[in-house]
Image (cartoon, rainbow, N blue to C red; front, side, top):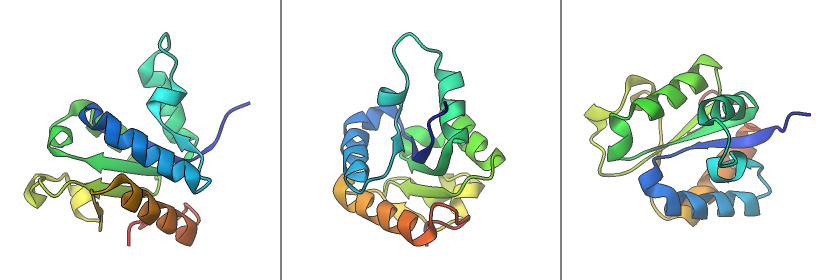
Length: 139
């Protein structure tokens, strides 16, 4: 039986600690979160598992920091989410110049990356407000 998730988290590994706190806070809102540390055992192939995670998630949260802007792996995850027509909530670090954002992110409103608790509260509010099904989840 496949597991379904409310939220898939795409994040740069340099932000692992921030992402852990963010996921913990989302889970306190009773959201089922796909997070690589929990979803992928050490002996499993990463690509297959993240593809499955995106497919089985209602919404994708895409965390953008300077490390993500030119990351091929992050862009592949973004492409997977867009290709599956998943609702997308971008969380963008203030130190990323708007001109460096890829067009699918730049064309959306995003949440400004800050405190993991505040960001989780905002994502949970958006998810609840839109039922995880809105194409413009970050409004």
